[in-house]
Image 1 (tube, rainbow, N blue to C red):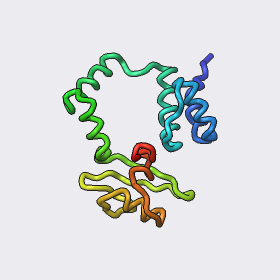
Image 2: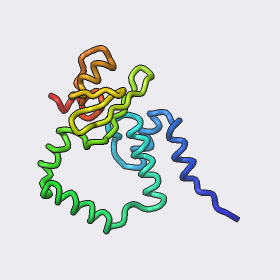
Image 3: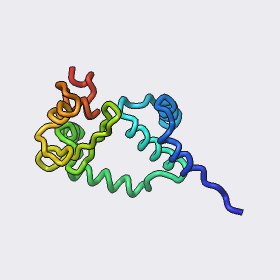
Image 4: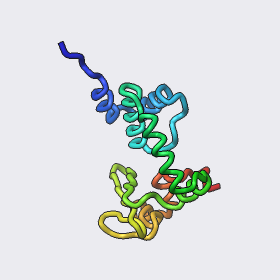
Length: 150
């Protein structure tokens, strides 16, 4: 007799779960309020957390290794790493934003951004091209909250 693993079904169900229910799951699994990020972010973090709780998280030696690598990159200076993270996402990062039912994917390049096969110097220009109005690209793509700007 084989046992049925319910985790793959739970993960698949995330795609069709209404956003308020995803936020409720977040509160249950993380014991905190969900962040104000897009639905896809919530789905991916919930999927990781469900698997982490069911199968176990990273091994302690893996966590230590990652922490060492981070210290090597920024000298362990949290302020420096935050400034660096705020400047621009890592090259190759894909920013995904749904606007009026259309999913837009922007790729971070070494010298800017790429959307629909065209290079852009700023994500604000891409946000403007998508919406037809002036937007702060960092806010539009969820990289910075409106409150953080104030």
